[in-house]
Length: 451
Image (tube, rainbow, N blue to C red):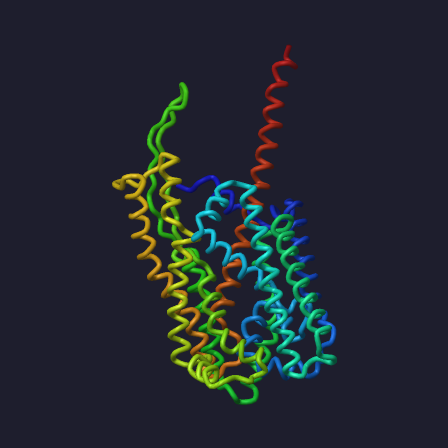
């Protein structure tokens, strides 16, 4: 039996989209702010030797230029005012979420409603400023060590830190504006735009290797087919759900009796999203990033770490998988799907799982189900993120086919389309309500005219 919402969703068309004026305004507002973001990536930080910077980014592509360049849309290569991107805010928000799950005082603050949420957001902004300041100072020292600054010194360091931290805070504000007045999640759309902006240049570099003979046509076709298959797998897994049947008993409120109903509790195969790959990549990039900040003047211990934990090395791949699995379980059980909270919410709503007693037994059953689901979810994340690393290390493929970037692009695209569809459905509901009100008025006026 198809629901009314599904029937309305199947009737969505370009005509419906053209009639949704508010949705068009939201989309244009979001596109305008994303264009502002792209313009800011081309405005350079004062005091940078832009000619020498290109060579530095090429040598540091496995460290700073690897992950940051993916999330900043090439701003790190041009050393723009948005060179740090939105990553300090994302890292701060993840850290604050983990602290809320582990510190009882912060967890109690979260339960205080709107005021508690505002306080937690304030802590997240403070953490963003701290992380952005630390990263900006390290980047300024790195530029001075690489002789990429016209006039090195404390004046350059202070101006560089102020510029980069201000750029990150401005991006955070842009993301909040897109979320509230635009369409979709603003922070995710900023990252999505940065990744998409680098795809044309990456494709051009990839196909140029084929023209010069560095890559055979069979390898090029195989990689493109693999990209399509991986995108299909990501879409399939991200839309997959484990549905747990929920039953609501018959209840009485006042003199009215409400019949019992049934629903289901959806559990995603990958409840943690792209958080585990981001955390794992950050930890793996730490040795190379520290080496870059120190001007490649490393000791024997750092040189050994770089040799064993370099991209493509067996220990690098093993540690990558272990960290993804660890963060997948840790983040899901402590932040994204806390079984104790879900069990309490079901108990407060008089809902129960058939055959399972409410309370502790429900929490134990949900923990058992989630633990088994995460076996598949962590294996899926590991495979998607490990395959590109093997391709780049074994076949020396220049095309940036990163598992994290694929996950972000696919997830943000699906989420944005879901928001668009919900706005169109709301517009259709408003139209139906207006029509029903007009018909009701006509029916009420009919008998009065006969009199």
